[in-house]
Image 1 (cartoon, rainbow, N blue to C red):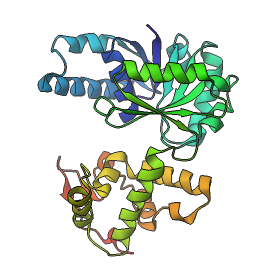
Image 2: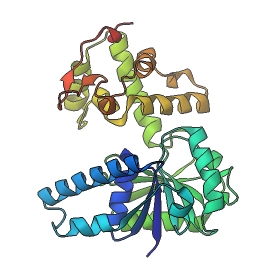
Image 3: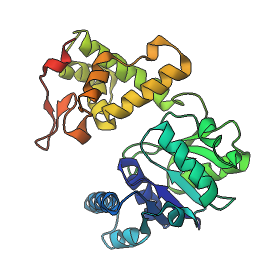
Image 4: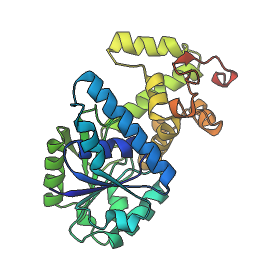
Length: 296
């Protein structure tokens, strides 16, 4: 069975490592320091406990899953044996390009180099490597252990063999892979982010309040959560970064981020991970925020 390396132990990285380890893969989890890795492992352990409670994982299997994950702060050591390397670092293009330049030197020549990017061009990422035909997008959804979709994004140079192996790999994780082409935002975020941005504009322009907007979309459109709560869950900084990619990539003003979103991120209000966004999460739950920042 293939050896897997995952770069980044944050929300997406630890979720990806969790799923691979659960399905019996040996996983090298790589991050810049041990504190980040231990935090990632603690999250995986907590999520495994949830699966045991729900009856989707046998209690005795938890330790087996955790024993399949090995941590590294040295990227070269962590990825050198990987047959498939999945990059799940912050959605920052310069950071990702830097990582892939290193992977091109550190990894086996036949390794698949996958990015979990939610919007950045796979073709651009591949352009900094010596083997662009082996670079592909493998965009998991959050939370990874629960969500079935994986967007498989072919770059301009991605070869058929890498695409078919990546699709097969996703299926072995009991995911539903969908192949898409490499254009800004791919499919998921090209559709989702303008909706979230329009919801923020509706708040910014005083059309309705936070709860009212989310209630309309939950009850009227059968969405499991409203767009403003979803934005908090994704991370407002991530939403802003994706919208900026769409705006730059298409040059269309319809993708321009709402000024309210820009101001909130600038103020450090990034959603659930910073404990405040459109809702306040500082007391362990979700409470409505009433703040001057929602005015123009």
